[in-house]
Length: 229
Image 1 (tube, helix red, strand yellow):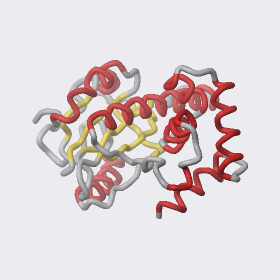
Image 2 (image 1 turned 135 degrees about the horizontal axis):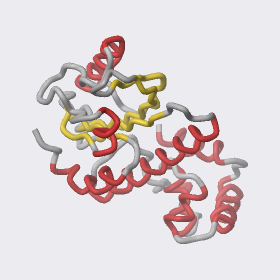
Image 3 (image 1 turned 135 degrees about the vertical axis):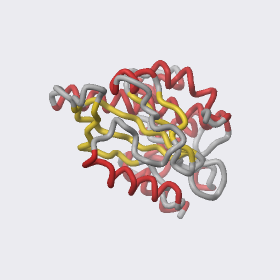
């Protein structure tokens, strides 16, 4: 069983990530695991392949939880990304490692997800500060993945394009900033995407706030989402 064709352009990105990635298809079958996850578990993280049984790297006390997620995926009830904490994985020598998982559904149509990315973050031996940094790094990896999905025309857990009438007063650059903000980017990653300084991005945000009569990023997101429900 291979990675779905729409995922092939993501292989280089997944292969380069230092945190683990497991891909399941819409039915819950494991189709891909990246080198980082294979190294964490000491073998092929997809095992048993072509099976809906939990992967061998999950201890028995995690199996029910895994099955609950598979049921959500296969029933089409899995609509948005989830940060799932307090997992453990085991390697070939039965050593346990605490991990956090970020589950990202990928859509290719109106029904349930075409695939789900399980991003696995090793949190063993981490202080709160270092764990937070690694989660931020993982989120930035998610943003890159989301960008690749947009190029492929595949919707993930998405924010709609900012094309409503109330945004007509924004400049082209301000629209670009708000698109990235509504997709989950932070000031630093917006700056990187648009080749701007963080200071310039903040100035664009101030202008957006003024034009739309909001006072914070949270208000802006609430305004946009409220208008699109």
